[in-house]
Image (cartoon, rainbow, N blue to C red; front, side, top):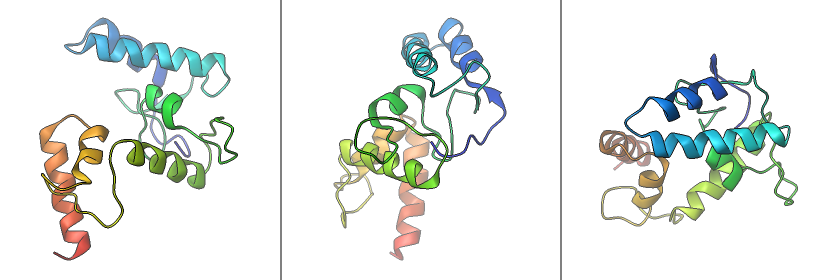
Length: 138
C-alpha cells in the first residue's frame, strides 16, 4: 500500500510464481486477487511491485490488499497512493492477526501472532521480534 515502491510487474510476478513455484497454491490465490484488483481499477497490467508481487510501502500481497486495504473512507475501497492509507491498511491487517497494543512481540507474547501473520518465514519473524525488542529498549 502507499506509493508503488519497486520495479517488478505485479501481475507477471504472481503469475510466474503461481505457475512455477513450490508454493503454487498460495501464489495462485495471489494471482486471482491481483486480477480482481485490476478489474476494480486498483492495479493495472503494468503496476509495479516487488519480486513476489508485494505492492507499496508496506509490501502488501494482492490478497491482503483485498482483505485489509482501505482508502480511509470506511467503505472498503482501496487507495494505493498515500502513506495514511498504507498505515491504516497495515493497522487493519495487524489487528486482524492478533496485535494487542502495549503487548510484546516476542515468541509466546500476544502480538507475536501479528508478525507470524505478516510473513510465514521463521527467520523473518525472529528478525522482526529482535528489532521490535531493540526499538522498545528492552
